[in-house]
Length: 329
Image 1 (cartoon, rainbow, N blue to C red):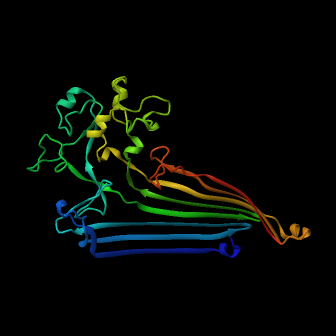
Image 2: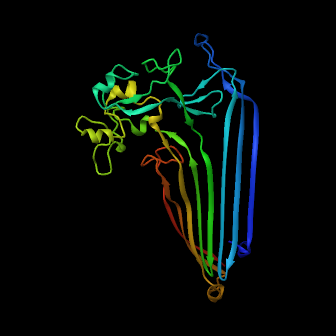
């Protein structure tokens, strides 16, 4: 980095914005007997509020040069008017008046059923429900009060935002004589992501293995089982292993499968050394720098092990080490 950059400099900026969208392009339902797919029309209104802050400082202390920078931003888009309509999306989100755009929508849950008595005394989504299955909350009914039945019309509610909030990033640079160090990072402060069936559901097919998350680090069961003690079942994170239980009850869209995908990722670390010109000039070289570069060395998160909270996919992040030499003749 150019040494002039480190000469006692402060950079700061802050922005706030408000945007009102007069029209939203959404699919409009039409009768299925027409044989046509739903057309898109301008039928909704939405407003977005957001802000962004950037801060940077560079200076030197004797032979030590340093620079730091940080930025953070957030926005929220609220649906104002859809003329009373709602749009249900296949990923488990909804577009509805008064809620954030593409909010998660599904059932509220109260853990796992532990006993047959608890099952018999509770409102159920499926008649095949057994101990070890997900327990859903009876939110409402036709008259606006709980009716003892779990029904998708009355018991599904907005569960929270699916969009990332408090996006941030920054950098740190240090220099001392010929040595240099730089670090880049980024992250998301708040986000709820849905754990899909491919991540956590067993028995999806005879050829598919059970997800490794069903076991604890020590190899013990992390799912409800008749072979567990009552204490182990009370602490289980996943429902009983069942094909029918999963098909009709356990893996419906609910807050049970929403998990924080907030993260802070170290994107890059670079360490280098530039050999003094007086030394390299003796062998006819104008400049010589050796360096080590590491891409994606680490990600701090509480997301599902083996899955990338940034990409939301099963792709493992590749940690890349590069050793290089820059020579100028």
